[in-house]
Length: 83
Image (cartoon, rainbow, N blue to C red; front, side, top):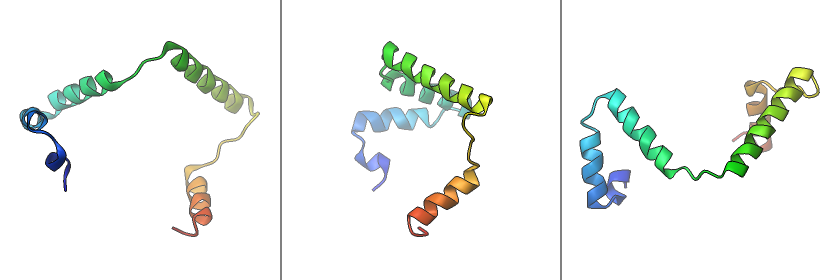
């Protein structure tokens, strides 16, 4: 069962019209829809930005060392039993 199958008729009609748009306009519509779903909490956002800045500073200072994606992926696969 695809996404269209679970949508109510008004949503299906809007999606069908949106899919007629060119790629750029579809991207604009998608961005606007995603932004409309965002729940903005200034305190939560400030804490998130502060945490990102702290982690970036740790990396830049050498306090922590990053792990290459390939290495992390292999480690995760080993933990999952090779899945």
